[in-house]
Image (tube, rainbow, N blue to C red):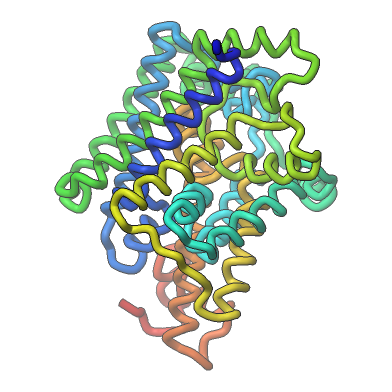
Length: 408
């Protein structure tokens, strides 16, 4: 039986996500672990793997644009892209606060949205709770007035509308072309190439990364999967998908150019369950998330690494409960997660994606520092004193402000 265009898009999205899930499980590609390794052990290997994924994704998207497979103005218009990474509305408070909340949440929840799906596939029942609470947070932000009541009233006045200055995109190429007066097409490719080259050089200059094949494989596959999803949803098949949706009474949810992201699909999942499993409310992101779980599960079975895990204590339960909820809130607020903004968004060279990426890493690093000092200096370190000391460790405050001796 011939598949419809929507079914083909979903099948490709599921298949590539399954491969990514298996490889990520195999290589232990983990952004929370990447920050932890760097902060706690000064091992940058997994962080460089994350950066390598960004570089691969940037190069891949540039090639898709240069060959005409996808539009050069990818992810600008909210009617044609989900989310519109390159929108001219530079919503920097969303990127910063959303990233910080997500970084805190992924630390408390023992992994980001993608890692949560990987852990579920590997038998970790704790991650089912994280997924559930992440879905609640994302649902509140996407399908209720929660974001409009709690965040947007004070954030919107701070947004920077670049279109008011004659700039129709927050892509780095567009921004620099507007400032320099250079040819937009040339500047876009030069900037993209230089950013990708810089990321590749930084990743491979360290033996922490280049000497570990698993890290190269993990980052490479994640980056290629993101490029593949862009090609499926924004290339020729994606254009057919958009055209088909225009003639459907009930098109699938979020028919638009997009790639992998793993927070908003959890909100879509809860909305789908609430609707009574309405078929038209299934999204590309939901199918992709299922693919990651299945790929991770199959690898866990084949490698005999499938293990049922449960909470060590009630405190551990509460920690994961809070972590999932904060990831749901922060991921939607920041318009993406470690994959959704940190790789997919960065692949479009959107300035906001780089800001969200930095905010996620900072939120995770500060949370780890606070937890470390409160553990080592139990009874002495309150939250504020641990935070100040952690910020001093990260060179965000003068070392003279630290309240406790450094912990190595």
